[in-house]
Image 1 (tube, rainbow, N blue to C red):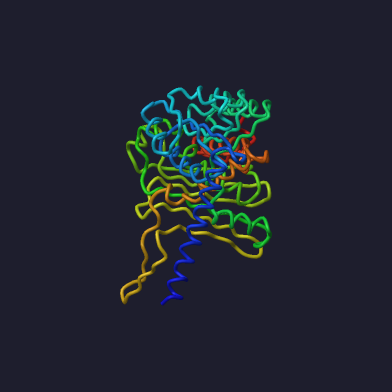
Image 2 (cartoon, rainbow, N blue to C red):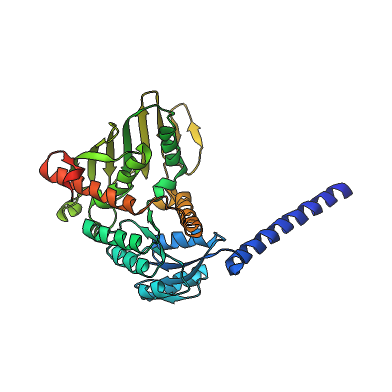
Length: 368
């Protein structure tokens, strides 16, 4: 009993030691003892809170100011995450000498203006998609980033999902030979509110834009031609000129072909799957589930439904993309998802919309 008691005391001591050591080094970095990136958050809604959580646990980052068009939202966010300053005007964030980098999570139609202002102020930039839906405006933002020598990372979080990364690695490492075709399935559990859809740009620009980026990411090749068919099962969505279901086929520079299926409603949950077929094999990844339990009986073999919300499905990916952004700022390396990666999917979305409208394949070279 004496030996066991001594063993337990030693374990408790070691646990306390490592906890105190971790806390010390974490606080040491946060308080300026290390190379800490001072972050200004612009937009304190749902996705802004997700990034705050990731930054809170990153010892190399410190959120020093939060802004939101609704001041109470900024104040609530600041109180929740221990951010010392909350403001209503995002321009205060960009102008602050205490800010090294900005994280832009504001409404889509504000992104371009904020990117340009942040670049002019010499801030490093993370921005949720899209940069803008107007290609000329996107080019203006990218020009400002380049001319002021700052870095811009786009918020395509799926590139940081370990499953999709493994698919890309299998293709890029030659594990499946020459890629022949990619098939992407992307279905939401339910449509967003109609007020959101009115300003979203439509299914190709809002929802499928992630899949356009993913097709480029996993194949490592650019699209040259797109064809689209679509329909709508929701009268309210039809009334605003949008669709609820679409299939897009793509021809790529490397000769591969692709298909993307998008639907606003899959009653069984958030459906995110990818398959790539190559000359010597295939690679695929399925949905994520809340557990791995499988129930077998004399009637059926079944399991629980997939994760039902994108915040749950990509929780780790959101954290990984923010970690990559902070590392980029600290080391000066190029972003994993750069500005051009924000432009090309918009071109693909325009091509898909044009194909749907005109009933023909559209080459990306037609989109200016």
